[in-house]
Amino acid sequence: MQKYSIFSLIKNAFTNHENWEVAWKDPEPKKEYDVVIVGGGGHGLATAYYLAKEHKITNVAILEKGWIGGGNVGRNTTILRSNYMWDANGLFYEYGMKLWENLSQELNYNVMYSPRGIINLAHSDAQLNTYSRRGNSMRLNGIDAVMLGKDELKKMIPFADFSSSARFPIFGGLMQPRGGTARHDAVAWGYARQADSMGVDIIQHCEVTGFEVQEGKVKSIQTSRGNIKTKKVGLCVAGSTSLLADKLNMKLPIESHVLQACVSEPVKPFLDHVVTFGAGHFYCSQSDKGEMVMGGDLDGYNSYAQRGNLPTLQHVLSEGVAMFPNLSRLKMLRTWGGIMDMSMDGSPIIDKTHIEGIYLNCGWCYGGFKATPVSGWTFAYTIAQDHPHDLNSKFKLNRFSSGHLIDEKGVGTKTWIG
Amino acid sequence: MLEIKCPYCGKRSQNEFSYGGDASVKRPALEKEISDKEWDDFVYFRKNPRGKHLELWHHVSGCRQWFKVSRDTTTHEIHETSKINEEL
Image (cartoon, rainbow over all chains, first blue to last red; front, side, top):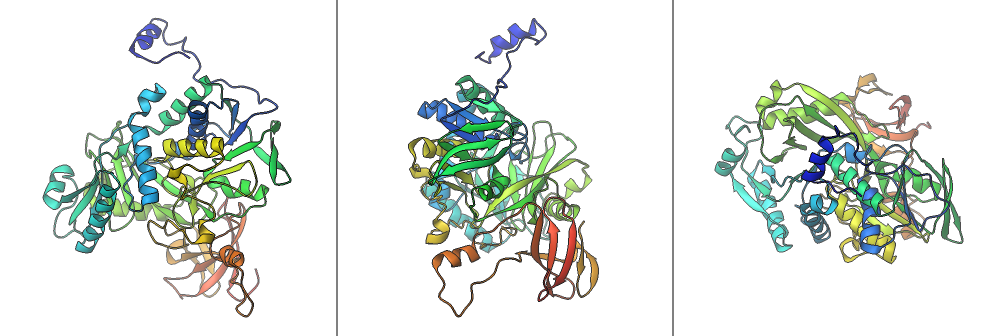
């Protein structure tokens, strides 16, 4: 594989950049693979990469119905963080942050990791108390967390509404300085390129239509491009998980919901950090191009449509305007929707199933993008070793029966609220 | 904007309603012994279909009645609505 560097860039400039190697091949599916990953999004590509790199399993196929990176990895707000309170989440996502920090070097692909800090604003004394509790829990788990007062915040986010007439006055905030953003497409492409170079077959436009299961073991997978024999199948299909599980006669603690995001027209540097509104559900950052990248609530009803409705967008943006009044002067450039696999406790599932050889990676709710590296890393481990790693040992499918829920937000089973 | 026909008030815009989830979920009968599995299925496990979905909505900023809606989860088309005690 051609290494990307300043020298290869200069060399290719002499030939008008017409002779770059393809970043990944377009192979025909083989008759049999050791492992088949369903879903060529961030998590599927990362899983295949870590299977090859960490576990030396290279006879792997990724089957993608559309094109790689066309689902949620291309539809998120690119936020990275590990500011969780419960141990299971905190330790898992913090391992992910460590993978993010070195990802560009590891993949030889600039994922534009930008640790610009994520600030959660508090709008009451009670909320500040809750945030300091969360901050302390984070620090006990070795995660960076800083409490910010109003005066410090005024210097950091001067355009926020600090006036006493604000509908939700700003009392302070909790910051994770190492949180930030990364370039979403580059993450998918970087993993795809490295996985391909180690022998993984990335098969696009290949839809899974069924599974052959005999005596509780998976034997083969049926696709729109023929049958593929395999003993191990990893499902990384986010919002479509219930549809594939249905083909295996499995019901899951998952509902699919549409989440919208949007970007404004590009403006000069305005916001240096990722900021979230504490009195509602709104988060924003400014992209390198200058666009404000914003998101908020789910549309609030089960949906498989990758587009949403205007009332939710209006609600979300009115929260944004309450926080940064001058956002009201911006024109919106684009809006889009993605299908979230909302789990019943708000935490993911990375586990084996009762069918031997079927592995499950789902339930990412809003937070799938930041988990891309650690999800792939732990899922690859789970598939290769046939048991979960310590990091994902709490993300079991049977926790809903055993009562070991990881309910970070504590909103119960109303997934459309969480 | 969805337009939802409340069986009591007629067609109103989505803003007046809040969602109540899958209407096909049935609480296990009170009088019989309930296994853990049945209870889990009721509380946590959902069919989550693509296409026709039977669901509960609440006319929260209107008559405050709960009712049933048959809606498509891919197109968001609303087929029909009914009172809570009527079959859909």
